[in-house]
Image (cartoon, rainbow, N blue to C red):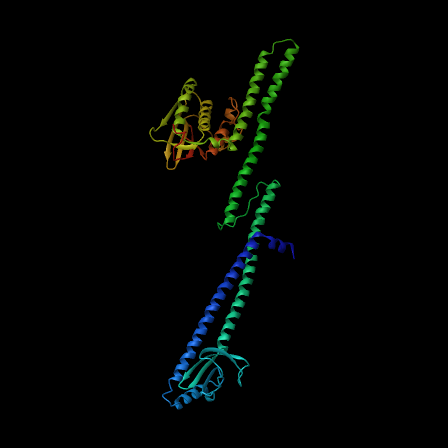
Length: 462
């Protein structure tokens, strides 16, 4: 047996198909046996009815003590059956044959079965007989069972051949279906092998027929897409860390070397130490932000999710940052429809962090005189929260890039920050199943965060 055939015999789809075929054949045999028994009983009943009807037709010709008509009727019916498919016997009280094509001996009254050996008839041919008294005489009518037995044999052979054909088709069909399913399972296994060997772009092929295997394959492919995105993100983070932190680390090293030189000359190094402390704090904040993003993306905070009114979060952000915006020469206001709850399912602290980052981003990168507007509203089954400004905005080709870790626009590289604020916003939004859209307001930019609307009550509703 080839390796492919051996694998097919061991495969679960083939075994399931073979089991189903076996169950189907057993059910067919059982139903066939029931049909055969019913048919045999019906044929036997019809034969008995024919024998009795023929007996009645012959017996009715006897009138009084005149048996000539009876003898004539028996001989006439016997003459109509030269092949002795039907037997007729009329005997007197002494057992002598008066008419017919055989002599019935020792047959009880009523129905009986007997084997007869007659000229021109196969030995031990079985007959079904009815015996009764017509006056002083005994009349026996017997029909051969050969026709009934032949019908039963044909039916048995038909069921036998049908069972063989169904069994063959079941095994062959099971093998074909199992081979087809096995090819798809082999495709899944090959894809997973490719992924384990580092080919993260490998995907399970889909037939597009919407069956269970296609459904599972879509879920696996979605998981692989997510895995590939996470791995690419890790690679990008590694590259960005190496690129973006190299400058502050080199600057820290230069500061410390300068401090060492000044110390060797006996000069004060307080300024250098303060500067080095600031650089180290900035580096530490960058790593803290990266760690926080990783924790959020891992879903570690979902246990703290409750149903809450997003209007309260927006209102709190507006209250906290209104004075900060005024101190920086900008204005901040909020548009909230009170009395209409905007319920979402989430973590209040993380949502506060999300909108705080968006507001701080606008305050940091917009010029004096910029107006920042916060709003939240219901739209169908979504809750839309918006942070809009009339500042310089973000070029269209840069809008997706700003959510990458450590990515900064050229115009913002001279401002403080690590380039992780919007990455944290994206991570929190993804954790909450929210979407983020950046829209050009000409002038200015609007960041619209769309949350699934929650229906319910809970401890977060306050």
